[in-house]
Structures are given as C-alpha cells and as structure tokens.
Amino acid sequence: MTKKYPTLNPDKYMEGWDNLYKKQVEGQLDKLSPHFVHYAPLEFSFFTHDQDVTGKKALDLATGDGIDACYLAQLGYHVTAIDILQSAVELTKKRAKALKIEEKMDILCETIENLVLEPESYDVILAIQCLQYLYDNALSKLYELLDSVKQGGFFLFGGNVKPHFRTEPPIRFITMTEIKQALKGWKIFSIAKEVRLVSPKDRRGYIWVVAQKPEKQ
Ligand SMILES: C[S@@+](CC[C@H](N)C(=O)[O-])C[C@H]1O[C@@H](n2cnc3c(N)ncnc32)[C@H](O)[C@@H]1O
Image 1 (cartoon, rainbow, N blue to C red):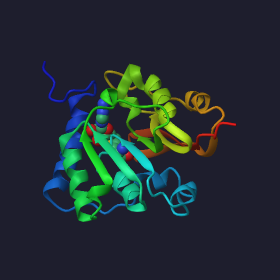
Image 2 (image 1 turned 90 degrees about the vertical axis):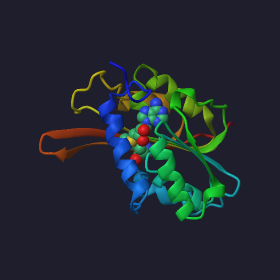
Image 3 (image 1 turned 120 degrees about the vertical axis):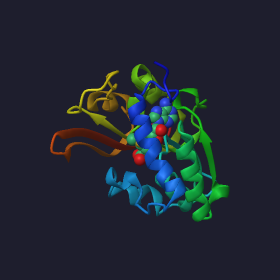
C-alpha cells in the first residue's frame, strides 16, 4: 500500500494533523498561548522576557500550528520553523503574516531527518512532540540537536512516554533516563513527567525538559 505522507508515521496521524492545520489555513486562526508554557511555566519567563534577544537564532522542529515559533519571533528571535506538512507551513506563514513578523522567520517544508545542523548554531532549539516520530533515529537526532545549541543556549524538549496506546510501528519514546544522560553537565530548569487522561480510555505519559548548555570553562 502506498503512503500518502513521506514519513514513517502512520498516515492516520499525519492526516489528523494535516486536517487540523488545513482548517485554520482556510478559516480562523486559533489564538492559543505557546504550547511550551505548559512545559516550562516558570522558567519560560526566565529565558524569554528578561533578555535582549536581538540577533539570536531559534529553531522550532515540527512547528505544527506555528504558535511556538511565532511567539519566539515576537520576542525578537530570528526563527527557523520546519514541518514535514505543507499545511503546517502555510498555517505558520498565515500566523506570521497576521502578527507582522514574517521578516523574522524562515518557514520551511522540510523533514527533521534532512535538516543540516551545524554545531553550536542556535540560541534556542525547541523539539516538542516530534523526535519520537523519528523512530530508530530519535536518540541520535537528540544528540545532534544538543550539539547544535550554542553555549549558554536553551533546549526545550517535550515528548511522550509510557503509558501510551500501542502504535505500528511502535513509537520510539525517549525516556527520562535517556534525556538526563544526554543533558549531563547542562543546567536543568525544569524536568518532569506526568500522566494525562486524554480521554477515558487514553492515559498518556508526557515528559519535558528545559535546559541550558554550559559555557565552556
Ligand atoms: C504532535 S504535532 C507537534 C507540533 C508542535 N511541535 C507542537 O508542540 O504543537 C507533530 C508534528 O510533527 C510533524 N512531523 C512529524 N514527523 C516529522 C518529520 N519527520 N519531520 C518534520 N515534521 C514532522 C507533523 O507534521 C506535526 O506537525
């Protein structure tokens, strides 16, 4: 059977996100707060509001509805936002236009796998609800991303862990132990795990981290 979307993800996931984004491309924009405030309610204000970020660069992987990417651009970062779905790209462009921040953003239809990452090139990298969809490449991409954060820069990660409904192929969850190991030596501002009741039959584990890369001594 041929796949509609060029990713290992089952088409039904991709189709779900695609339809969600298309609705907003054609209709009203959701005006939600950035998703990552849920992961970093306190630390969020620490690294954003109090600093002059002119000239600083942020990368939002799998930007989806673009809310996080546009928020960072509003704060003054130059943001590269990528997603595999054209609908996500169109939605993010629509949002950027409505907020008059288009010149602060590069919004690209690109897969995380194909993204060329230079070492120490971003001040902030957001990888929220996306690395797990790289399956066997999830962990190696995590290390590549950490390498691309500048000294003193921030990494925000969010992902699922067990409990989670079964998927085919099985999602490659990045565990708390793995993320702690990868962030050895970093300053951790927030790290947590919780189980959310998404619906009566759907209990889902979430983990998130906000961390800052140390300056070299
Ligand atoms: C659960 S949504 C998360 C979106 C956003 N980061 C957020 O936190 O709301 C997952 C997103 O990952 C994108 N995606 C999945 N696999 C991808 C890949 N290999 N490369 C780029 N984007 C991908 C999907 O198109 C979708 O927009």
